[in-house]
Length: 226
Image (cartoon, rainbow, N blue to C red; front, top):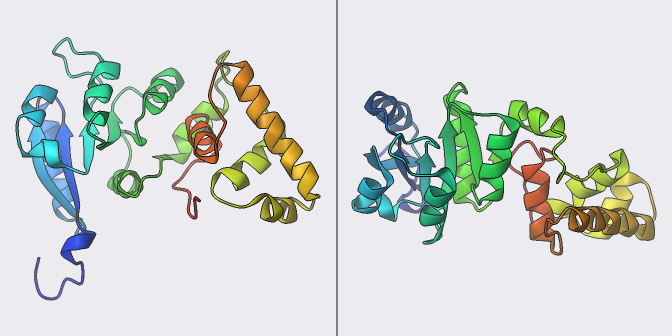
């Protein structure tokens, strides 16, 4: 970091990447090298190799879902998340089911390998900040997904969920929606009930934020989360 760079050490996000294709890892290294607030500290072709090296100390790990070594994506995610690392899935497979399963398993973000580096950078920053991110294209796929455990929310319930899940108090949600606070509360209560009916936890505001990300109701990093 040169003297003209105003990024301080505390601003730097340490990143590691796991992918079974060395050419992908080389490309990531080249791409992230030019992002001044990232420090790619390790790349590896397997999760075992990453966790045995400096990559185990990374704040954010980029994870390919199919590592070609017989390991399963849910197990890999659990291993990475057990030490409170943030994980961004960086994968060629981006079906609604694949995205949904990864986000529900605890991934902070999902970026298809066809996306731009700006999307990848946004996802990494959101993960480091403790929030979630998927691209608008993936959010649209999730919105059109008709999985049986995705509750059927009304437009007003979705609007209330989006506002409330990103940190707004109910009075502010009500004002934004031009309804009474009691009506806004009823929307949120119905959202919680519908998620409970399909077996998905929605008791807290953090739970609601996660459900909104998983189901595509929030398609970018959400600011101001309480």
